[in-house]
Image (tube, rainbow, N blue to C red; front, side):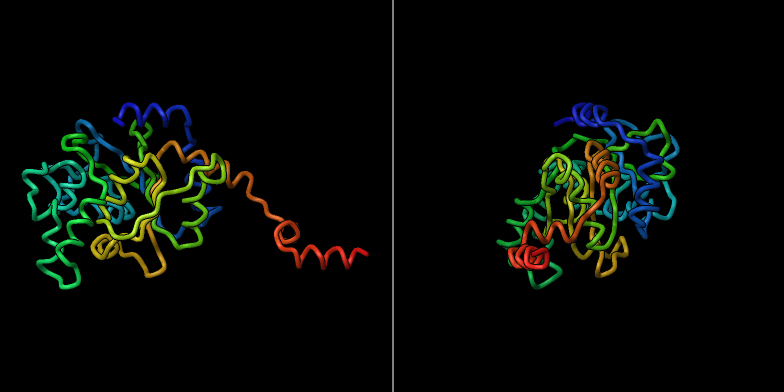
Length: 258
């Protein structure tokens, strides 16, 4: 997978950004602003400001109305630099690559568990991207690519939105618990080419001010049309579903009809 292939797939399934935002805010009724993320293989988009913060916190800054980016020079977390491909394996060393940092300032990780955590986490190849940029979806300039849509929401809405592709084309979303938030939010969608829902870890949840009932949902651009399709066809007949699924309900229905 490279960025041109990613965007070619998205171009084949274009989405009306204004309508998407309207559906998310007025039909889904999200309580937090959707964030548009752009993978940058060159300079960040014009008008975006560098943010010397951990990349996982970009969502919070974008929710506040800012257009921001991180790159190898502007990024306040070695773990994020490594998982985004800004920091080479050699430069990251065993401190990051083997998860030694996980055992040095907290007591609950064993060394083998920390190493396996990093081995199972998604990481972009070194040099794949030059920057990661984020902006509120409502303010995303027309000429800036929308590569990922990142949402922070409650479990009920997350279930619906993360499942959009599953009910339109049958692709089940990818779920994560354990990896660093930078890996789950930005590297996992790239590698899986799929929607990702993740609880995140302490840092990512804290930086983004998640409530205990909230989690992350990240949709690649080529899954966004399915959100609109799903809500265009969002109807449900509870009694008919029970009749089809539950023998006791079907029998009681037949008895009442007789």
